[in-house]
Length: 189
Image 1 (tube, rainbow, N blue to C red):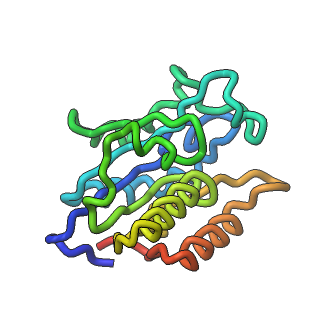
Image 2: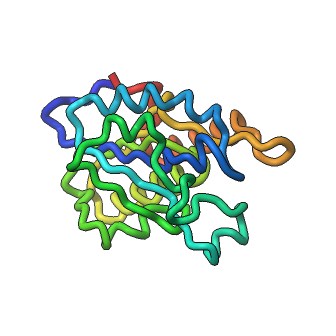
Image 3: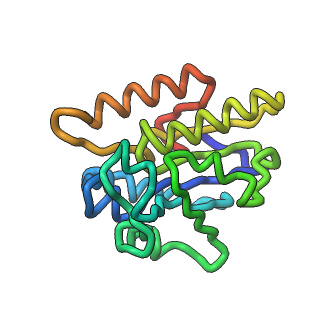
């Protein structure tokens, strides 16, 4: 997909943190294969934000998922490859749930001001999909034609033997998002 330079575009980098990419109970080093594609996308002249999992030790989410990305630990930090290309104006938002949408009022971001919202990162079937579906249905509710875009080469999920096969869950999540009207594209040129 080629984005028109006259359109206002925001890239949301979701959970590219050590706790999903490099170490910890929910990490999968295979996710790191999307990092060069994300770096390439971030080199374009788009607005961008970073969203990170950041939990306290009593987080209710831990009833559904293993303990991960505790606040103040290395797991909750953005991976070094992305830190290297961040600038002082980049905003980092910490979330305590799988869905960043619940923080929209606190961020002050006016998503309605954009033509395109590109969501990248992990995990495709959890945090990426929940945020994308919430945004898309919100735009539907307010009758705003704003593109929610998922570039397939910039999203991935973890593999856990016997209960979470990455390829299957990626495929299902991408199909669900596409059926909901989200633009699922192979890449952003």
